[in-house]
Image (cartoon, rainbow, N blue to C red; front, side, top):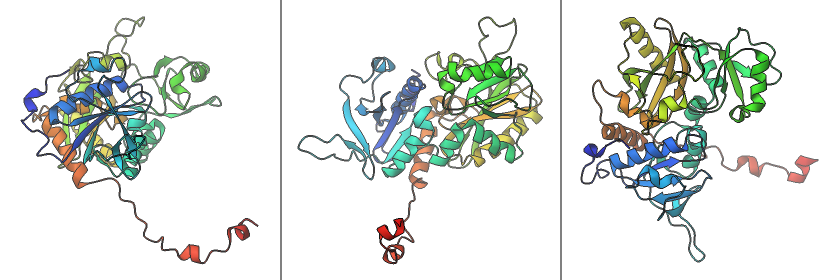
Amino acid sequence: MADVTADVTADPAADLAVDLAVVFGGPSPEHDVSVLTGLQAARAVGARCLYWTKTGEWYEVGPGLEASAFVEGVPQGATRVQLLSGSGFTSEAGRFSRPRPLGVDVAVVCCHGGPGEDGTLQAALDLGAVRYTGPTVAGAALGMDKLAFRDVMAGADLPTLPRVLLDKTTDEVGFGPPYIVKPRFGGSSIGIVANVADLETARALLDANRHLRTGAVIEPYRADLFDLQVAVRSWPQLTLSAVERPLRTPRAGGAAGEPDILGYADKYVGGEGMASAPRELPAALESGVEQTLRGVATSAARLCSVRGVMRVDFLSDGRQLFVNEVNTVPGSLARYLWIDPPLSFRTLLSGLIEEARARPTHHYTVEGADGTVLKGAASIAAKLA
């Protein structure tokens, strides 16, 4: 785990919020990376830790644990907790006792992929009346839906590659092979298959690849394009990080010098999330290309209602740029990108927490539900007649 102790004060949570809790884990393929991000964040701000297991249970765990404590699942000494509508995080109800609120003022969301990043967790926190960092329900859902995201970008005239729905009835896509097939709903690069030769093969992947069974998209595979990424944070004002060019690992069996997609191993196998991945930072780009990228990233983030810190991912050949996707809860919360001017992890987290307190996401209202419709309604039996 990265050394973040230089950012820690004697009472690091005292000036940030009352009762912080870092939430991490969850039933997602990116569970392990989420544990790393969560433990880093908890060390940086001195918060309590709420661990979401692979099977969906919640536990409070010690903030000083290392990643190895989670290899077999729930660490020793963990205490079972619950997330309840209207009550937030509570102790587990006993045989003769009711659940007791934990008093979590702000939840720092460090859950990558799956229900932690598609709006599911955000909706549960809204119903629990818990303020939290990161995307809203709508922003998270849009960021996780690759088809809807691309259509929103194209509708705003931002540069994108073609991307269409792939199912077993797809017999025409409007562009030629080779193709790249991706899960429609999913984070990172898990489940992506590049350099697919034809549509028949692409359709066959729908049964062979478990990550594609809930939905898939297809787009042109461009071996000439490389990745560029920039982080955007929304508080105290919209700010962009340095631009990075992640470096890819050559694909086993690929032709010499053949570029490949940025894979899960490229991003995370180093052990600290994206913070340990090989990269060119800042990326060596022509000034005009970088200026265009920053303008497009700003527009993309605003269209996705950026909240907290978001990473906008591009594909480029060095001249052209294409918006590829956004990551609304990026690995390591993109802390490694803030180098010019340098921004400490603690300062980055402080902004997320301040925003969560100043701009809570839940704002439900019952205005208009004054009983008038109920008073004038006929019997239910009459309505069913």
